[in-house]
Length: 71
Image (cartoon, rainbow, N blue to C red; front, side, top):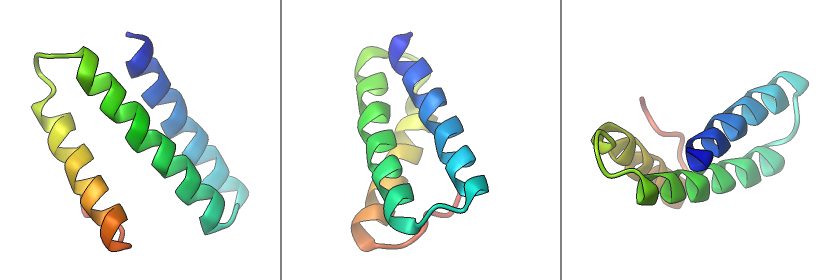
C-alpha cells in the first residue's frame, strides 16, 4: 500500500512541477523516479496489476527511446 501511495504522490508532484513550468531535465528525473516506484509497487501487488504493468513497460520503452509514451 505504501508503494501505491508513493506512485500517486509522485504523479501529483509531476503535475505540480508541470504547472510551475520546470524544465524537462527536472521532469525527466521525476519520471525516472516514477518508473522506479511503479516497479516497486508492482513487485508488491500480484493481482489486478496487468494494466499497470503494461503501462509501465510502455513508459520504460518510451523513456529508453527518448519519446513521450502514447496512452
